[in-house]
Length: 363
Image 1 (cartoon, rainbow, N blue to C red):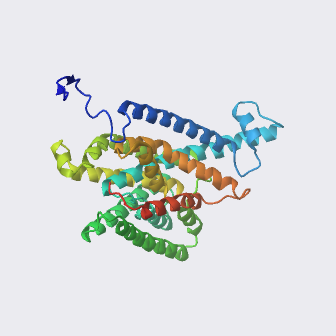
Image 2 (tube, helix red, strand yellow; image 1 turned 120 degrees about the horizontal axis):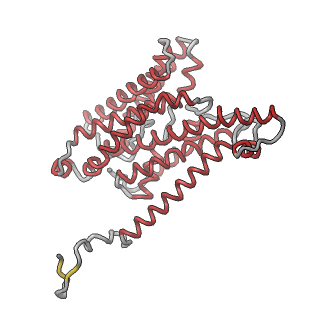
Image 3 (cartoon, one colour; image 1 turned 45 degrees about the vertical axis):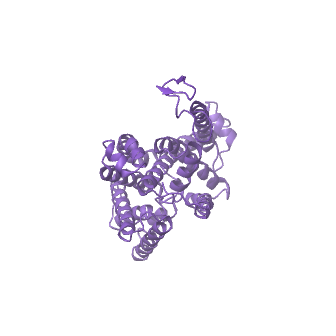
């Protein structure tokens, strides 16, 4: 029980119910709940738009009529619209959901582990490691989707471990700019080696080019099924380390005092990042900046709590990827732009804004 200065008493729990910004905690929680509901509604609208809009001849009205079960036009036209909806746009949208969620959560985890707001799979060479590993596997004759996923995850964990290890060896683990520079060096090196593979093996050149640009075009449900086991395992581990990561943000001594093991938590988080980035790269190619934009937006909405950031990343990640994919389809119709190009156009200004901020935060 806490005594009031005049001699009265305050009910237990009253203290600390008003955050530093002056807003009652209950009001902030309700506002966050309303925001999440709006974001879910926006994601549903984007998924519907992704089903209705494309670069082909099947327009939105025909697609909507097919979706509700009342196809327009002749039987051949109806069959074509049904094929486009079920075999092309439907799987593409589902893959976009999985890829966006994977990259968004991977970015949030990587930033929490590195305590660095610029830690992003594309900037730290994690995606480049996955793409290079897949390129090597394709040159060696690999074709099975499950094999590509495993190889991509191995390349992701090697790239992540190299960049974080090199940064700590040079005592710059907490320097955001130098960490990004280390990742840029690794990405450039792996990109050069991948280009060398293109020159050495023309047979696999067309397949390797896909991993260099990133796209959801032509993705099938079989590709999504190949990465589902990895996503399920990553989700399970993420749920178990969310609370320890939140404690780790207060410092290693606090985390140890609460019974957590910081080193084990970091290793598990890096393993999850490798699984998520490897799976996303295997199915859609290297897509940059999603892992930077999504956690940045999530923290702007919910604050620095890693648990809230992860839940919001689960929504914001698919929103960014699906919105970018829709733009990629229509901006130069009937052709399509690369999804990686659109995400770069979105993410580059965010990166510049973070770097130019007066006080670059350390997570």
